[in-house]
Image (cartoon, rainbow, N blue to C red; front, top):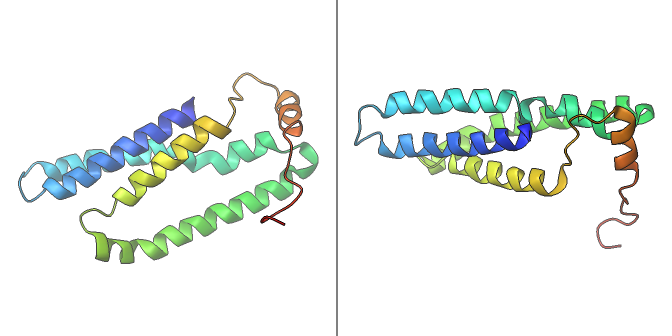
Length: 145
């Protein structure tokens, strides 16, 4: 539930930030709206996707695989951070003032993904969560082979 609230908050904050950039030439107060939307992004990211690598991975993997899974997950997290930082200036150059619509779309996708595929683990013991994920059938073939 908390993750869903976070994705909705990010979606709305990115949408408001985009609107503030588009409307900035017409309204003087849009700078204040941009600051408020950016504050919302920071807050909603902090208690949602910002800490996923630390709590989701720790919950879904059994104890014997947790250290490896955490290492891989955190590496992927930092790789994604680098990718966003590297591509953002190019995205900004070509899409101004619509740059954050990409993030609106991303937040919408991950909201859908979270609702459809991420189970609620609040109030469950680690053993029960591990048992629940152990019963999920894993694909045995990859890439259509």
